[in-house]
Image (cartoon, rainbow, N blue to C red; front, side):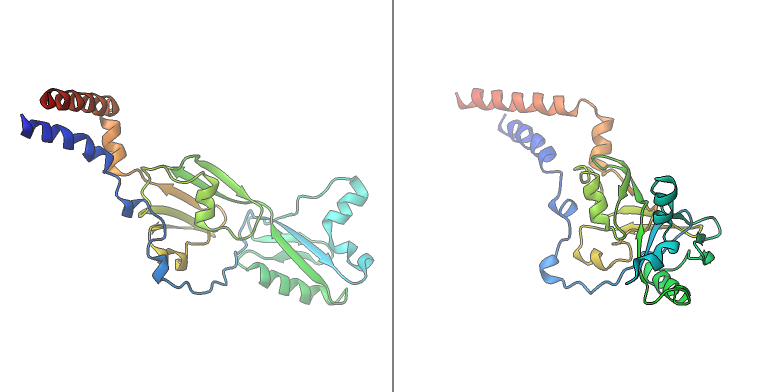
Length: 247
């Protein structure tokens, strides 16, 4: 009877301890890890929508180069920025068609400053990505498309926007699907290790897809839908046996 009782006592404990800490905790070993500085800059791609604002010491001189200003004064409608077309170009006021896909934001700023120097003195260029979004699928709390109003988004920020992974999500084997200029890559990421922050996938690109696979524990639980009931029954029997034997 004692051997049987021991088995019954251990059985529910197996389920309660099945979640290993090493499989759940993020950025393990961070106390012994030094991150290298990152100069990450997003690269503009086809279908990006960007805001370009030109300013000078003489505000009137920059008016022809700002589509927001033109749209407001003529139609009272604020423009939604420039859409990078399938050829990687935009139509910029006065300058005409400009190819910007494949360049970083800083590179586009430098390009525009050089081109605008013919028309205005010391232009200041501000560029912002308007439609940065990524997709999170699989074992995250709130899957779906997540939009951001910033040019730089980390994988951890995207996970935070999805209210974190579920307890069953594989943190050491996240799949990131990246499409850059028509070339797709499939990349595996382990966010349980601190050196992940030096990964080329720590910062996300526009339209990245993050898929979190379920751990075997969840698959097994789904295969046995009444598992919680079984564990409850076993726990009840364990308690009753303990009471009987104690008497």
